[in-house]
Image 1 (cartoon, rainbow, N blue to C red):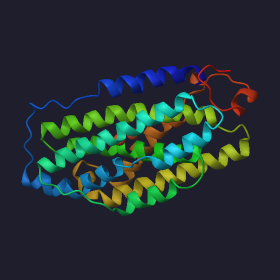
Image 2 (cartoon, rainbow, N blue to C red):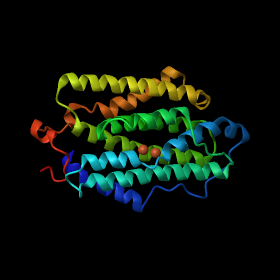
Image 3 (cartoon, protein in one colour):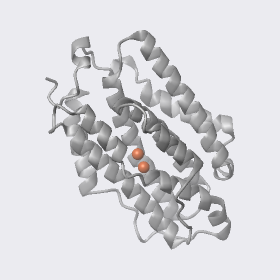
Length: 255
Ligand SMILES: [Fe+2]
Ligand SMILES: [Fe+2]
């Protein structure tokens, strides 16, 4: 992980310089039925993407307190900007189809409240959970429409979110505790959070998700599969590290 930080920094810089585009020539027809089906749901996800990232920035600053030039500061700033770009892309689509933006949503409020708790690690645990669910949701949203612009928009978001989840998973792996009891407890807490959040999202977005063929259990299973792939990386991919290394803040040079 430590030696990967320059790679992640290069990735996020490259993404900022050359963001994935949704071609403007795509068919942009959204039928009245599709609009009614997705309006409230897409507005909730647009709200979720539009955080100013202040809490995350503060957590990153606290984590890197002793290293003002730590690459995390720039990586997370670019990451937050990318999420805000998602909000803009969704907002522009909504505006073009006269779907009003919303300012409050129950699930969004719950996630924002939880994000106020703990340090960088607990914030990342929440974030990665929300992003994993978002990936499954955007894939479902793509399925329920014939609007090419929305389909490609969903694929663009999923492509970005997959990289976000991989990045966050690596950081969490590097920050992990080596106390087995605590690690077990944290993992159980994360599984509970994923289950509760997945079911809450299914309930609040069930019209879209049912239309894509998802019942609550299938949706939960897909969210868990994504979780298992990223958060339980096979041991072969885990770099051997000493306890001494893991106790220190992440550094770009591994020193
Ligand atoms: Fe996003
Ligand atoms: Fe993301």
